[in-house]
Image (cartoon, rainbow, N blue to C red; front, side, top):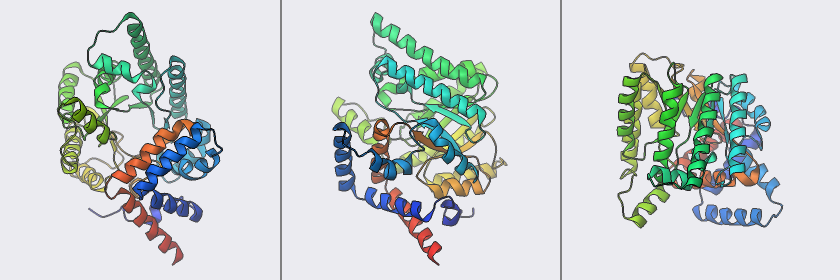
Length: 388
């Protein structure tokens, strides 16, 4: 298969020279692990102390990885990307909330993004995190099948109602809905909720998507068991496939609590698991839809090749590729150039509230072998091309 991901002219066609230089500066910084740690600590301190650093954050890391501070702010980015065939997933990336009022606010924002998606072809999906609609500890207790007291039971019923409100809205407006995965010790409760939503709303086609983190060795078996139920009950399965974002936390907790880690033993094992899940879903594409969330070029090529071998068109509506805004533009824009369905996750929210997301992006780029160096190499290639 032709190597399309090295075409930097296509990859950075929307970036001005100034934006390209900013990207180069950012990834040079991110490549330095000690600098990321120091920068994270200083930024957190400055924000907590209400020092005037938001403008600096906005002009650098925020604008590179985020679409804006609110959904309207994102529209210019959405429209710009769509001129190149790259769609958007508006992701309200406010994390770590604990209060009912905050969950209700997240619910309202998610419903608003569904409305946005209904009105714009450039936004084919809406998305939310389970813990955006309820407390992490509550998901954990429910997943562990612990007895809930009356207050907790009432609280959980509100979480279930919020899930249903969002899924019902997505169904009625015919907007596909991605539900993100989180840490394994809260995921069982989230999986059960999403399963119920699939049963209820995926009867005619795929509307509700769960997320499988394929660095977990048990996820392929979970997919196969879900498929058996779906065949019997007659509903469609939607899955966003990712490798995962909480590996260090997962392994540390397994050691601390003395249980077998849910994480694959190696990066290679994760890659094999990811590609196996893609293949399984393609083999049952009549009843499944895939959102392949990956920055891995090899896995992207494998999916493209598997589609070709099965005679599946590049723009088949059941298969989407997804990357995060600000990363892997060489994959996103070159896929779109070749008529594949591609969507960028476009995070938004107040600068202060989105910082946990931005910090995780920086840490992820530092820890994933080769990711930052690959970004830098591509940027250098494009800088050189523009000067020639």
